[in-house]
Image (cartoon, rainbow, N blue to C red; front, side):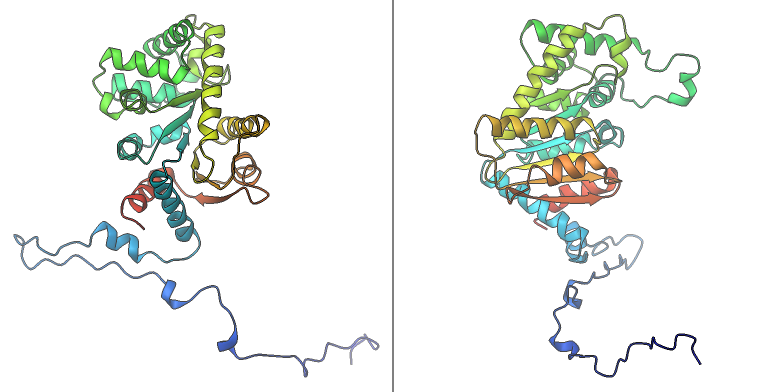
Length: 330
């Protein structure tokens, strides 16, 4: 006999139930994934009917959770192009280091990317790809000897571009794009900076002094760096203004700098009493951090001013998937 004399287990006799068929469910078999058909080959020389198309693969994905978000973002980007609204890709350096520049350049040329916003590490990695075809220093191997970040060509190029940009009243992104294109680098076809400059696509660069390797080189002119990146902030705010009524802003791989810059641009636009509603934001990263979730997704689109999506995964997988979904209408 229980020691809890005055407490009895709840009686379940009169629990109310309902038929399963009457319940509204969030997942149905119509939304399930479908296996991609295996390649078939009748002989070693017959290559007909050996692989499904990319559209078949995208269509085979389950219409659930992250796939729904991916399709929604892709649809909003296509709509932005159709309505001639801004579609801004805000990127961190990891996007360049994972080899995604060709994918973004292709979207840019097709009219799906109307502007690029970048933190300082993007400038370093993109410039090195353009002139050397390689980037991403082994920090562990060089930090102990004090050699990390001491590459001469990178710092000289970026710091000179900032000085000349300040002289000509250009933003930092445009100034570096101009400097790179003038060099006719061997790999300019793989450079976002070169492609943006050649296609007259705004490329804004947002740096915090001390975060990037050119900042401790003797060629640095801090005043020029500050002036050109401030010019880019003002240009970025104008681009954010153009998100109104159908634009899209993607934050891809920047956990601190760009989310902070985006939030300040949003408040500047609204402070000047420009309309900024009915737009879409999305954050792509392998973890969902506080600032992107708050400053890109929640705050700018709050009070029914827009919609937002968080997609978690590695950039080298998620961004090609996004591009494919945009181009193939998924």
